[in-house]
Structure formats: C-alpha cells, structure tokens
Amino acid sequence: MKYELIRNEKGKHQIGGDVPTNFEVPDNEFLGGFQYLGYIDNSDPLFSWLPFRVNLIHPTYCDEYFIYLDYDNPSAPKIIEPQDTAASTSAFDEVNKNSKIIFEGIKVRAEAKSEIDEYESIGMAGEPDWLQDAEIPTCPRSGKPMKFLCQLGSFGDIRLVAAALRQDIYA
Image (cartoon, rainbow, N blue to C red; front, side, top):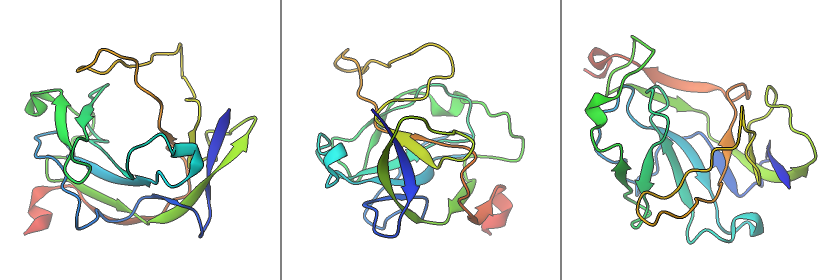
C-alpha cells in the first residue's frame, strides 16, 4: 500500500523545521553537512513498528548514495557508514561542511493512495517509488534487509526559511 504525506495541521509527523534542542546531529565532515528534514512519529499506527519518534537527517548536498545511522540513542544517532565523511563529494560548489538549510516546519499525515504524483508530493510511505529496479539496502551490522520508512519529494511546496551556504556567513 502506498501512502502520501499530505499537509495537515493535525498531522503527527513534521517535514522541515529546526533541529530539536534535545537532538544531536552527529559530528561529520560531509560537504553540505547534515540537514534536518523533520520527523516521523511512531504514535501513528502506520509507523507503530518504530521504537521511537525518528528525527530525519541527511547530508542532502553530498554525493553519497547510502548513509547508515545508528539510532541506538534516538537523541544522538551515530554514523555507521561511510566512516570517512571527509571523503564525500558534492555537485554543488557553494556548499561546505557548515552549510545549513532550514525549511518551514509543516505537519503532515499519511493518506492511503493508489497513485502518487512525485512532482506534486511532499513525500510517501508504505512503498518506495523506485526510479529503476528495487534496491533494498541491508543493515551493515545485522546483514538483514532494512524496512522502508519514507521518501521525501524534491518538488513539494515547502518554503525555505533560511540558508547559509558558505562558512563566512556564520561570522
């Protein structure tokens, strides 16, 4: 079953927003650094398999294909792979490890859909929208297939709140 993440003020999940004060982004040297993308709340029956509310982070502007995080401590995940984050590259010359992008925080809910228009969607859950063939990652620790959480769209209408791409902007 496919679920679309729909803007809804009473939604249990959030896309965008500031990093919560009780959440620590892992130290890293990724070009573009980690960007905070929101959270998925396990109080939603669709995500009741999660042991806690998951804060979503990703080094959006780096060229790494897979990034594995250990959420043993949900408030302070650790990077499992890649181990050498300084070796990451980026197609964007404007970014460095201190770059920061903040999107408006919007509440969303998951709504069952038979088809989802990726050019209009904020995101999806249930089943990924594979660009080519299915490529289910395996956990680097257990070797077991990983369970799909969500996929965020690139074309959603979420407003940019702040952007600082170069280190000298932080002075």
